[in-house]
Length: 287
Image (cartoon, rainbow, N blue to C red; front, side, top):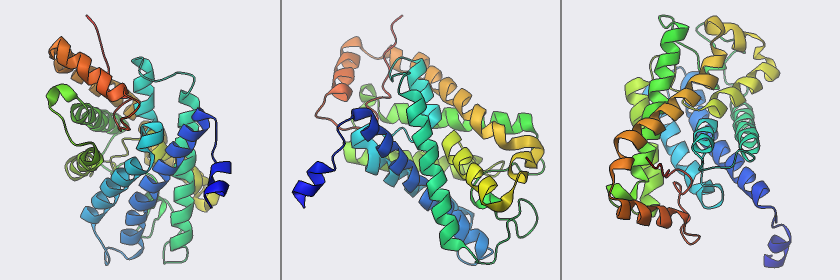
C-alpha cells in the first residue's frame, strides 16, 4: 500500500496546494450547507439558526485542519487576494487557488444536493418552500444592495482582523493545534452577531460555487436575479473587506510591535518545520 501511495504522490507543489484548497473548501461547504439543508428540508424540525452557525464554524475548523499543512488553508479567494496585494502570496498562484476553491465549493454543493434530493424541497429561489438559500446567500427583504455590501465588508474585515490577531506571535503564542478551532470560533461569532442580514457569506467561493451549481442543477437564472441582482455582492464586498481588515490590523497593531519580536515571529511562521495556518498571513510592513 505504501508503494502505491508513493506512486500517487503529485510532484508539482502548486498542484498539491490547489488540491488541498479544493478539499478544504469542500469540507467547509459540505458541513456548512449541509446544516442549512437539514434545517430547511425539515422546516426547523431538526435544527435551527444556531445549528447552521455551528455547521459553518466547525466546517471551517475541519477544512483548515485538512489543508493547512499543504496550502496554508486560505479557503477563501478574498484571503488569497489580500495576501497577494500585500506581497505574501504569489500573484501567479492566485487564479489557480481561486479556481480550485470555487471547484471545491461547487462539488460540495452537488454532494449536499445529492444527499437531500427528494426531501420535500422545491427548486425555487423564493417562497416558503424555496431551497436555493441552502446553497448560496440572499439578502433579507429590508436590505438594500448598498446595505448588503456594507454588511459583507464589515463582516469580512472583522474575519481577517481576528485571523491576523490569532496568528500574530507579537500578541503571544497560541498552540498550533488550537488555532483552527479559534478560527472556527471567529466564524461562529460573526454568524451569531452579523448573520441575519444576508447570511454572512464572507467568502466569494463559498457563495459563487454553490450558486453556479444551483443555476446548472435546475434553480435557473433566478439565483442571479433575486434580491435585485444580489449575486455580485458576495463576490466583491468580501474582497474589499478582507483588504480593509488586513490594513487596519497592520496599521493599528502589528507595525507597533517591538522589531525584535516581529522578526522572530516572521521567522517562526516561515520555518519549513512549522505547518501553520497563518504562515502565509503574517505580513511585514516597513514605514
